[in-house]
Amino acid sequence: MTPALNRTRYLTLLGTILSQFALGSVYTWSLFNAQLSSKLDEPVSQVAFAFGLLSLSLAVASSLAGKLQERFGVRKVAMGAGLLLGVGFYLTAQASSLTMLYLCAGILVGFADGTGYLMTLSNCVKWFPERKGLISACSIGAYGLGSLGFKYINLMLLSRVGLEMTFELWGLIAMLMVLAGAMLMSDAPKQQASAQQSESRDFTLAEAMRLPQYWMLAMMFLTVCMSGLYVIGVAKDIGESYVHLPALTAANAVAVIAMANLGGRLALGVLSDKMSRIRVITLALIAAIAGMLTLLFAPLNATLFFVAIGCIAFSFGGTITVYPSLVSDFFGLNNLTKNYGVIYLGFGIGSIIGSIVASLFGGFMATFHLILALLAVALIFSLIIRAPGAAKARHQAFSGEPQLGKA
Image 1: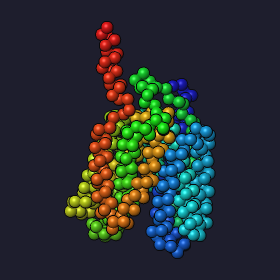
Image 2: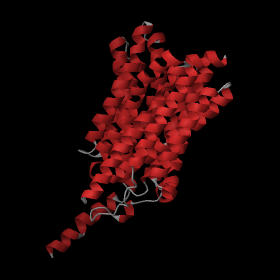
Image 3: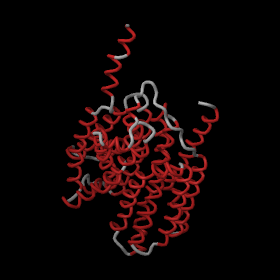
Image 4: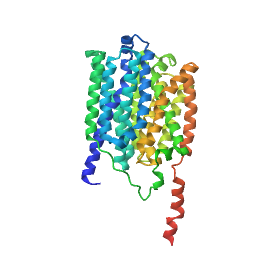
């Protein structure tokens, strides 16, 4: 790689990290539920549904971002996402009804966030094909740190300038960060198949979706997202109502989840460059199963409770970090944004399935049993799945070139 290209890709990495930090700020949403509930005179549960819509809209936008990048380029699309993010937060500040809140915070902010998130991540990974796991860890780690950094920013703003102005300033800060990051980004060059990588492994979305491996990966991703997102959403409630912890002690679950989530992103992301990525997912699934078994069947105390939710958060954070590179291992780098985008819909779907099951069957224990069963199936999938063309490549390796060499 020439010095100019090397400089370009590191500027793209810096811009991606800056943008991802701002985009991750949406995960501070729970800070606003109580004040929005008072402002709109609506139950907290209905106000909190805006975040469920945001997650679903984020996932849908992620699946469409690849087509936008193909037409306009990563810089223009990221700038558009930043502008839409700022507009969405500004309109959220003016929301006077649940419907407007759902449209502005749920649909607009979610769509802007999803458009920028997966596209910039995938583009950055393409720039570093030799260190895909590490780059995913840096990028998605920045996204996770964004929620932590903006937690303190937004808490400070709420205490000083009130709810409406906080949304406006939040939107302005996030928009400027995404725009600044976008200016540093460049589209990754098209990847050429190496001598060891058969061209048949660089699949279009239509080709990938015709393969069973694609849907096995999608099911595994949805299951881990369901377990992580559901436990993140109800951890404090589990601690109080099921483990009978005091409210202040149960609230520590938020910090445990944040640290375990970030630890999973960094540890498994780096590990995925040193061993088979599907085996890293196997390890993540084992951690999630251990956590879920502990929640369901162990005599819980505070320590076991925090260990259990920590295992699940570790698995969730690591999985969403490794998956972009894993999908590129299976289906190639050139169509990664589109191929991973459809699989990423599992993030949005998983975020609402757990809540639906809990409401239909009377609480979080029903959801936990469903998640445990799905995790067991996902673990089996991770052990038996093989990359498309792997068998063909092995056959050529053992029966093709070696024989020519002997001749």
